[in-house]
Image (tube, rainbow, N blue to C red; front, side, top):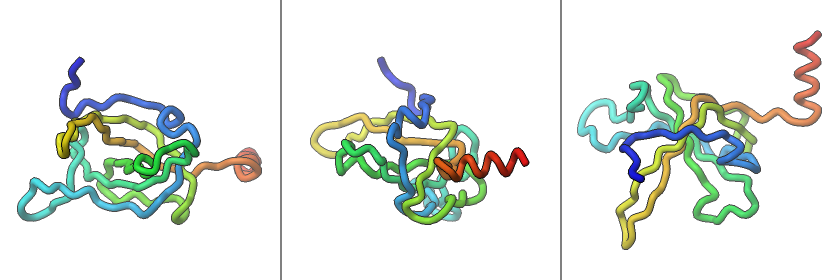
Length: 137
């Protein structure tokens, strides 16, 4: 089976990060290295909006070191603001993956880019009950 370039496959957050993930750094612009002059901010092919990336650590205890850090891309004209600081547990909605072939090195291999529509802090335990009780009041 062949994938068309640029295809995005929907994937639930829980399938990609079953143990969750935490912010590993800040939000940075994705650079378009094909642009020679002017605005080199890469744009999303589907929406035309600017692409931003957030580095997160996969909290899976069995994740291999080389696969622990994942860069999640979000399309937005304005820079997304992470909830909290580094090491804040986050979750994403509207996740998709786009497979591509990395032909650098000795053997080509299939890799994937991860995209999301939205990022938010994970609310658990008492904090979520308190927030729910406050909204109900």
